[in-house]
Length: 107
Length: 117
Image (cartoon, rainbow over all chains, first blue to last red; front, side, top):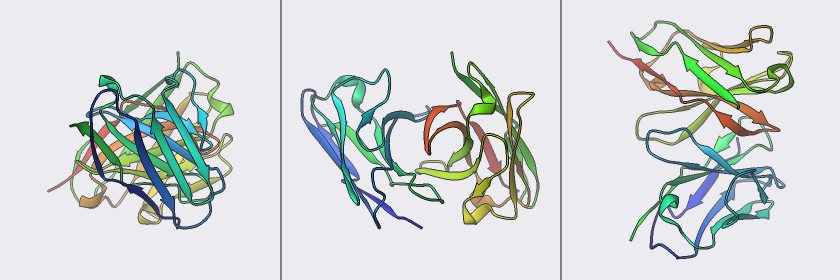
């Protein structure tokens, strides 16, 4: 199974900050990586697919990059609505696996 | 508007069974793979199972193989998860999700399954 490791687990930031979350795969997954945002009590929301493609309707302050085993999600200017937990997910192979999550909290 | 609505969750004793359903609308159900993803209380996301568009291929996480069965009825625009031999560690919110070549583009609101005596 491919293990996905996110860092950090928790990130304290302020509105307007540039935020970067890293996701590492235990083996190469090419660009088969997605990023999700989840708020408490809600279903996850797809932000990025194929490592860098922005899902329709997602604000352009979100961006993704990387390939192989190292990936990043960047929020260029953190907005109040962005405080949430973020997950990466690989879909290079089965079983599909998620990172453990990164909680972005108010500093 | 794409909608996915899960039902069938509840409290069940260890060793018991439940059948989850996911009713979909707003897209051509028969053209998309579908999945179940779960989230234990206070924990992260765990993929459970995927079924291809025509039901010909099914995939499961190892922890549910032989106990859970994913199925679909394209005529009824519905996805199912039959869960047998339930364990305490199966306690979670179960989400159905529409595949986007392996990522999950649309999600339902989730249904809570609690396995406890």
